Image (cartoon, rainbow, N blue to C red; front, side):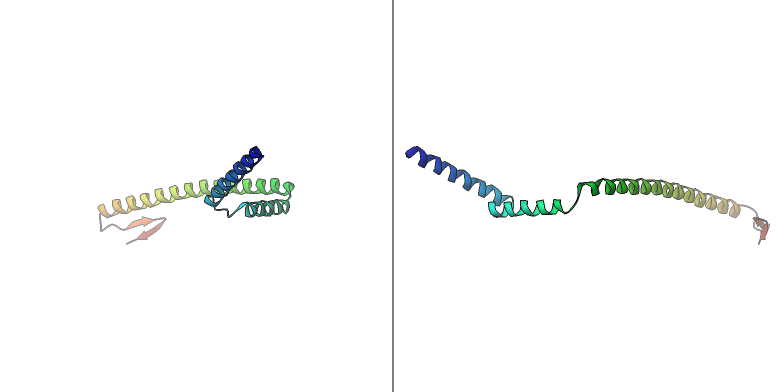
Length: 111
């Protein structure tokens, strides 16, 4: 009988420690943990496994497309930067030249 009482006491101590750890983890008690588990099961049942693969593939395609768009935009930015630098260099060279001579820009005379 004493052995049975000791086992029951050990079990109660273990249960108390478990409740404390659950509480520290943000779970009120074991019944709320079981309730969360059941809610998770219901949520998982709402989504079929067969639905996930096509969605994952679509996301992968979108990521690939966005990567290509990013690369294109980076090239465009680099081109734009080079054009702007060239434009500034041309204007600087024009300012150093003779001010009295009209310059030509794409077939037009500019005074």
